[in-house]
Length: 284
Image (cartoon, rainbow, N blue to C red):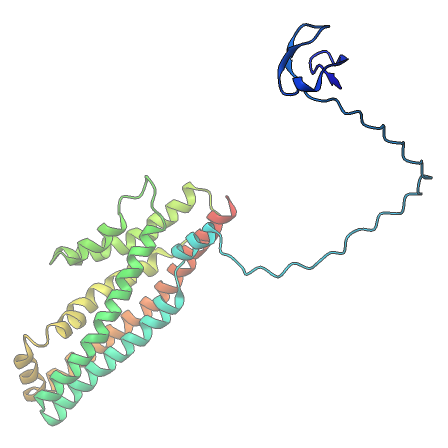
């Protein structure tokens, strides 16, 4: 039989008894394992076919992709956290304070006319719930507005703006300093950063600061402390009608003035902070 050296490809005859055994190639002298060599017939070349004329390429049909749901970018989420909602800080606060003031005035008028202590306590208890909610909204506005202008030049942090309002006696001064200071610092902030938006009216914030201090002294604090001094209040409003009516008128006038001033200030503040946020987004 014939075998082939896998090294030099030389062919030679060898006995079939050597299949699977090691031997040396007589030509290159390299060892290899003997295996029978089988000749394969060469493949006949395939007949040439005439070249086909290329067809014009047809672009694949486009399949309309399903509309993707709108996804908020991290920047839009950040802006939504910074922006101030008028629904909460203007309209929500107004509704809450109207309910609180209405319940308080109703209780006092019924106590004057009917001399009912229980009516005074019940209506003031309900009024205090809405009053506290209004205070929370107001404090949240203070925190958020100061947070919007924080840089190395601002001396009041959001936590400081709120925290100092809980210091007795000092909070009267702090109310003025914090509110007026915001309008001044906001105007300085947009000047230093060359942001072309409207300035805040400082005089409006001065008026609001004084009315906030006055209302806190003659309206908010007495309403929150009514359960401690309910006997004196009841006695004053039941036994001294003229004095009681004068106090009620003064408190109502201060409350209405504060109400109007807050509405104007909160609208201006929301617009100012939102304009500042939009201007910062466009500059990125």
